[in-house]
Image 1 (cartoon, one colour):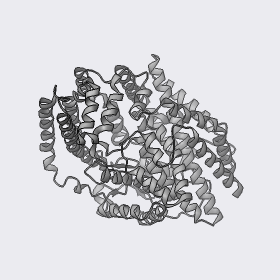
Image 2 (image 1 turned 180 degrees about the vertical axis):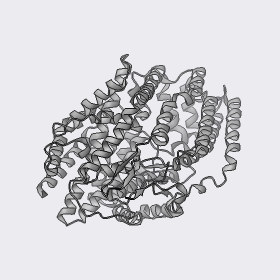
Image 3 (image 1 turned 135 degrees about the vertical axis):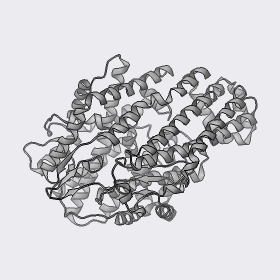
Image 4 (image 1 turned 30 degrees about the horizontal axis):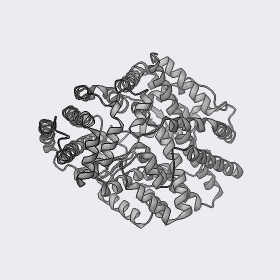
Length: 600
């Protein structure tokens, strides 16, 4: 029997690695540039403290210089972070990332006077500056947004203290990241051919999709046994992460940690509650799908380790990375020639890091800064589902590309709420492209099953995660202590509610919460579900209405953070303040389920 081992970074062909050298060709300048950024922040504090609102010109200068400082240090941090992600065991880039974080913390402290001083200035005077100074019109939305949060901004001294605490308050996230990516080892299992294979974050899902039930069971139990062994450490880490959220919200006088998290996007809590309510209303549809899964698999008893296996077994056809790119190009044609041309240029420039290697961060993401390519990290395994991952992350990167070509630095990023729409529109277009061109009954069943799984994994599962976050934060806010045992019980109850009676209980799924990195960025995951709902509506508009809808969507991609997410999405024709997009997505799920069942 052979043993399959991950390649090291230097064994990966250069053409499958991102061109990160284009970002910072010479690493020797980084330390000096970090020092320059800190010195610039010190000069900034000396120059503008107490004088921020002396005149319209002074305020404009302060905004522009602040943007320039952050723009420079952001580039170094992003570079160091991505180099670390190439191999988390490489201490050099861990050190560089830590240096950048320390510099950011120092700069945050030095510049922390800005927002309190802006808020303390006479509001009528500041708004008058906008009218009298053309340059300040660029910052109008940012200024008015800051004033909206006036009651939650502390004094300059208090803001300075919180800024200096930045490294400490972010520690739980960093601890979990290192534990989960660098230190944790799951051991080996036997694959379908009997080979001894190392179990990793990157290949776990492939094992869970294996048609060999014993392989699935082995991977499932091996993974969760590892988290079970670390549950006390992870429980403590997550508990303090949640306490940090709650205490931070109280310090800033928000009614709850959730309200604090939603406030930045000016999202009303009803959007969160509507999502959970609509999904819960439609849990019978998910239960129907799970019952159907059990029937098709022919099991007397079905377990969570059986949830991911495709119901339709197809020949083991590999989809190479190059083939995946071609499929993506065809699927995204409805977005127009310009979109495709920009995307192709990005691929040729080296945006994408393709294959897994030892120590590489698991999963996939799109990342970059205002002055870099919008890079994409993948762990590609030659599966059709990997094509969905490419097109998802390309949606993020093209969103960044369009935004940074139009918006100034201050609006050059995206809220997660809108970012998840850009990625999921691409996924939706891919699925609809594949279904529109598929006449083979078995392949069509396979795709419909895959589509149902997207809904299960995104709309249903991410909403379940959102419920878990609500439960844990509410517990802390009511004075409860989060223990591993209690969190296991809460998660088990949620899993039972969502997956229904067709799934047998086991001793492992209750530990699943312990492996979810997104929980360390609280009240984040619900945006996957809302984004999925919005994207389902937008992709339908593009395919039904043609170029006008595509053009409206492209205009949305250019907006960055120049307005609140709910308002920006209206440009693309979707109103997420209403429960209707979630209801429409649920109707789509039921339609797909009906067709799938009719083909069996």
